[in-house]
Image 1: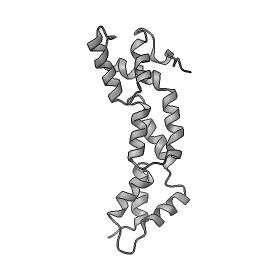
Image 2 (image 1 turned 120 degrees about the vertical axis):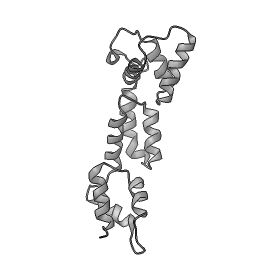
Image 3 (image 1 turned 90 degrees about the horizontal axis):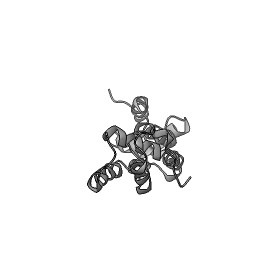
Image 4 (image 1 turned 90 degrees about the vertical axis):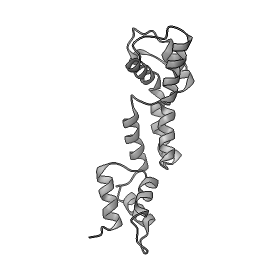
Length: 156
């Protein structure tokens, strides 16, 4: 029994949100000679079943507390999400980035950096997680005995 492209796409969307480009890539592998994948995707968008904005929000929730806004933006771009759909989500992630960076840092390291080698090690850890250099400096300079949600961005 072969599934229609629309039924296959709805099945994929029932399991999790997909970006349009990601879903297109998956459906092309199952398309027959007369199937129009883009028409199916347009129909799903028209019915509200497929949304890059909703996908961006779900991706932000998955990355929250583990990665910075730069990593989130890179992941969304890699999955073909448009700048317009990702911009509000990335902006919201950037607003909360200092507290997130400090929380990530405290989960990984039990003490503040004692010397320049440890400072560089902790900074690299945050950088690899997608946090910007200004946020990294702020997190590494924050007193270790205050809660992460109290840290404020000096640029704000």
